[in-house]
Image (tube, rainbow, N blue to C red; front, side):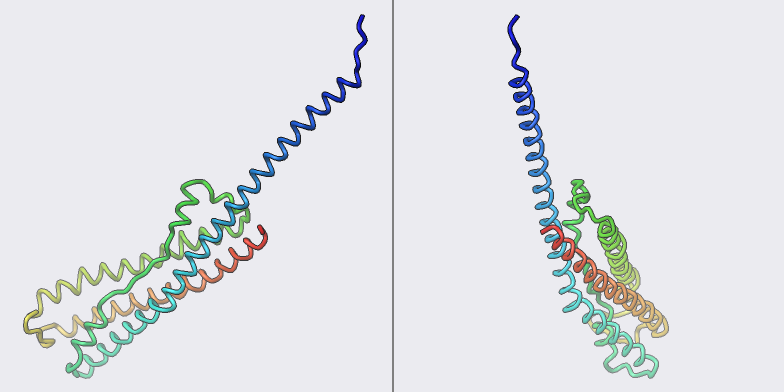
Length: 217
């Protein structure tokens, strides 16, 4: 009977186990590295979109909507004082609409592709979801409500109650107009309040995302 070299068999077995283990470890390390790199790209994309949106709100949207509310307030005051000289101009500048909504391209992409789970911080996940699925949605709703009111009330009044070729403010029911301006101003003020919340929560989210990115690096 041929002698079996158990030591050689044991060494071969150990070599196979080590080889498989090292390959498995290398594969896991590679996957973890890819996931971490993807997480960093996602976080950077979210930060970039948020910061661009915040610049639009702070440099344009808030200023324009606040000014629009001021024009409506002045118009209402002039009606109450029966001072109609510059009223058409104030109304024209007050009843338009300037809306903007946070972009959700990256958020929609990572939720639809299942990559949202790559962000492993549960509290950060909640903060991201709250910002995009609550705050941003509410901001959009405020703007759409204003647009609907404009189309359903101001446009019919302009068409039915004025001569567009020779407009006269006296042709409009000033009591009805005042009520409409008050309602519209309240909508704008509510939207401004929501836009301010978008800015506040957007800055907080951007800071949280930046801190999470630092942990990944």
